[in-house]
Length: 133
Image (cartoon, rainbow, N blue to C red; front, side, top):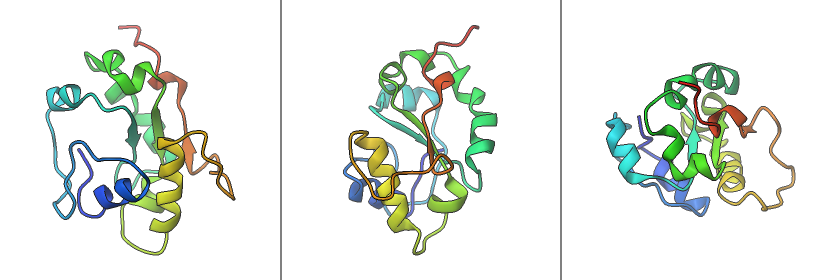
């Protein structure tokens, strides 16, 4: 699923461009081939209601798909897991910090004070290694 509602606006405020989601539109399912065709530079995984631990647990549903290793974001190590439950999945005051954390994903050399904590952002090695399948 690609994020809709307010998330494309958050991506823009963080300095990025949502390639499949549309501001103000509901979150929607996309076909795997649509994601492959979009070939994003960065993939931010923030499933609705999921903590980082839960997202990491289910990451294999992406990493085991045909073509995962061919995506630009995967090849360049630009896949990040974010705490969707804490920051991204409902509007509120935390969207300010959500924007900062997302900006640190889009621009890894960006210095934030405070820097994103381990529970806010993770760069999973298993997301950038080709699957053994």
